[in-house]
Image (cartoon, rainbow, N blue to C red; front, side, top):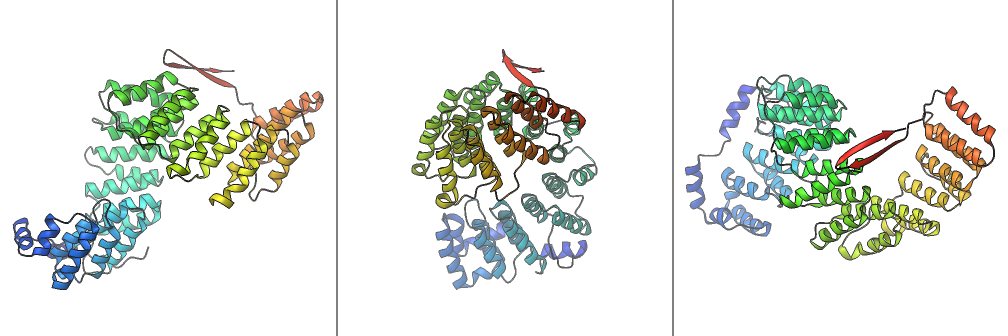
Amino acid sequence: MAMAPVPSPASASSSTTSHLLPSSPSISAFLASHPALTLLHTQCATMAHLRQLHAALVKSGLAKDPIAASRAVAFCAGEGRDAAYAARIVRHHPRPNSFMWNTVIRALSDGPGPDAAVALFVDMLRSPTPPERRTFPSLFAAYARLGRADDGAALHGMVLKLGLAGDAYTRNSMIAMYASCGRADEALALFGQCQVFDIVSCNSAIVALSRAGRVDEARAVFDDMPARTVATWSAMVSAYSRAARCQDAVDLFSAMQVDGVEPNANVLVSVLGCCASLGALEQGAWVHAYIDKHDVAMNALVVTALVDMYCKCGSIHKARQVFDTSRSQGMAKLSSWNAMMLGLAAHGQCQEALALFSELEPYGLRPDKVTFIAMLMAYGHSGMADEAKALFASMGREYGVTPGIEHYGCLVDALARAGRLREAEDTIRAMPMKPDAAIWGALLSGCRLHGDAEAGARAARGAVECDPQDSGAYVLAASVLARDGEVGRGLGVRGKMREEGVAKVPGCSMIEVNGVVHEFVS
């Protein structure tokens, strides 16, 4: 990112002071003396009103006044309004003050295109108004959303030159940016500079460590904190969930209850996801009851997590109840529909999944990549290979969705399950991308099901080439050969597996008894 020369801290301070707004009594008197400003302050409710009043300000010449322009900018930058319009006001103003720049940069950083905040900041660097401590946090938030840690590091350098690194708000925004971008070492270096306990920086350090896979270090930070907020608990539960340490996440959620901390939606979504992975239906149902009892605000994320949990725990009927209730209340977004269709597909209820698919358009929804994975799975599990092929062909033609490797995997699986092994293999050969071990595994499973040793051997070679340590490919290949009467070749495959040092992954099953999940490993 190109940057203008950085002013010294002393010059920045004196310049910024000249651009501050007058005191509140002076502003009130100024507003009261101009009808258009009075209306802007008391009656303006929509952008249409704002544009009319802005035209009146331009016509009268008041639009050039920093106080009048600041009021217009503050209105435009409000939630659900037009930050781009606010940016145009700033760019065309002869003397925009720091309040105007900072307000619009913050609004743009929170909007759908955070790169617009960076562009406006570059314009600010070219203006007489220098950045100050309230400018930077929004920019670091924008870089976090954009995943541009290197540019964020350049901005960090500017903060150091301006002498603002000691500002807690700015430092915490830098820690959060590095954490979000997976730069744990940089985040922890800043965290180590905190002279006193800062709960926000601790939360960011937990996020940074968890995203770097250092979950136990994140837990150490969590345990050392003298005080915690719900955001702290949420960060730690999410860390366990992301690391697939689901039982730890559920246990921490229980400790949260003992501590009397009321969970937010993020915590509940993480815990529900862990219950789904564990197959812990009783615990998941308890979380659902907690949501109902405590009137936790339902949103699409919570609805989707509930539907997914019930589906994966085998309670498809309860999942459908949650989905139908949420749909009638307008809370079921596309992600919720996809979760329900995936659950129906996994349970072999193809017709029910098809019925939901046909209702997407009447509800104003358009299928996405996940939707087609669900439907291809539904056709495959129901033995409807021709229907799977037709749907696959319609993805790009009718819906503008380019098939990805997951969709090819579902199609290969559908063909292989139906015994159309040659067709499945031809589909793999014709793929525009390199097949992965999962796709060869789908063909290999079909070969085992239908007893085709030669095709199975080719599929096994393909799977091993993709992942030489994939024990499943060796085991399936040996099973295919043994089923086809070639026991010797099957034993040879297992011998090859030992020679390559590939260890068989032990089987694992879990069962929930009285709300406690027990794991069994073979």
